[in-house]
Image (cartoon, rainbow, N blue to C red; front, side, top):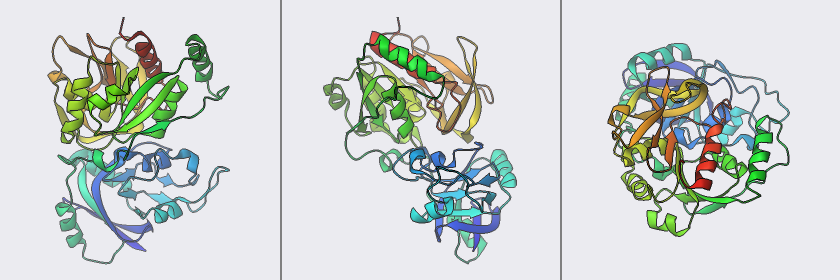
Length: 383
């Protein structure tokens, strides 16, 4: 089945379609992760995007329910070099091709993804369209130009939960990775006390909720439109601001809610939550040329000078130069392009990071941030 990928600037690729039949438009971006394609597909932060994998061979370990990061895939389309003809993994329940067909997601393979990614790095992320329908490529370019621009569009309302819910996942007696012993000690010190946290859902990943459970939190998830008054009425010990898709400045209601919550309860934000917190504190955001997406981004903790290899997925960032002087300080910086990766308030127990410490997919370098949040909530202050 022939397929085309057309970008708004006129670049067209011819390849082979897989997954669903049809046309789909979105912002064409790329992810440098070697594994974790299922987690990427189901990450709500990719809403409205055509995701290109830089690793050439995708689909070899199939799909399984346990690796879902949300209830369904959120990507608009999937772009790869080669779809594995063989699935070989004991956990696999179906092939990637079948999975995309089930969820009506159009994919394209057999194109020069190296050329595409180099173009996106030079020219920036572009609107595009994938089509398995025969037609004039020039018309597809025009369709790409006419498609929705992610800037200024509230993508959060398309992925946030419809109503509040409790998330509970039991903590295993032992973990098969080193952090297990530290979690056991953490829970022994808290004498089994489970602190409560309200998670404002801007497009949250399941593994963030699992991490909060594992670190001793009783988790309640609420829609992004929930008011500050309703959140405080739940009497949480802490508040978490989730990841999510799109332009943070297009979600003014969430910015205002967070502004009202600052100083009321300890707050921790990740990714979009970091951007929303920065805007609520008075900083400005901007769109990155081609974003940060992958499991190999180096970040420095400015206090300890420790380097973390981080998992990231965002197309916008907070401008460090606009942080309110004397009130907010930068805590982490990206070593590739020197953009802001973390901030904290100097008075209130409030902090955030741009990257994903829940490592799904990705390394475990940044897990300490959940310990930091737990300790901050227990004390109710930085000191």
